Image (cartoon, rainbow over all chains, first blue to last red):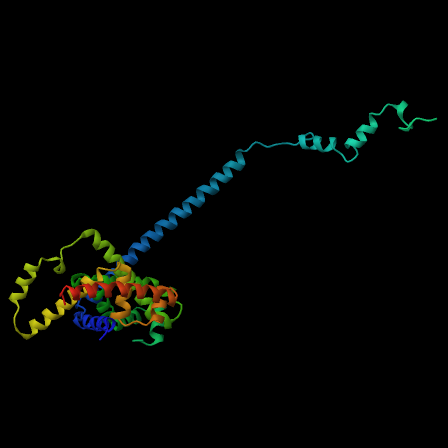
Length: 116
Length: 191
């Protein structure tokens, strides 16, 4: 007989050697008692959790309303800084057009090569 | 399965008498498994009740009545494992921890054939418990379910939610460790 089968046999003997456990008469009443006590705990816990969640939501809403009411009203009377920047950088005012504009009138129409 | 799928469906729907019947059908099997897993007769009922309380509160999450037994085994293993973790911290005195002299004294008080059988059984249990100390708690539970409770690899796959091959490897390693301890014990003449 190999070691493996010895071990298998030992496992079987172990199973046979473990005593059969009979449930006591109090097993079911105690079980239901435990289920109900945990049920009560969960009921109270859930109730508390729900109350806390509702209160938190109410406080958040209140703070949001207060925040909106207290915020200073920003009136846009004139052009903003970004508007001014946009106006200054139109498509016409590129580096090339700026160079043309700055060229003196005397040089306009002259070629780069000297005439003979 | 020890019960009809309809009974599980009823219990899942919150039917208390159906749940009661379910517990009555499975409690002896669960008590036996827990007794082998935790090895302390005084706490077996307590852990079994914890299993059924957990079952009561998680039954609505059960996918189908067909997987009820692996589900119940899973709850049993978890409850047994939780208990073992708790009791490790408590370090209670138990029969297995008594000195040889105390055990011999207890043995000498017993007499007759029944007592001899009981003594033999107790010797087998103690020997196996000593072998199981060579593997981790997780591996001991796995070996116990496979070799002693007789669960198939398919059932273990359902219980642990682990692929069969991984389970095979783990079981093989655990078995090898136990076998090594067994051979050492045989060589020392302990068996």
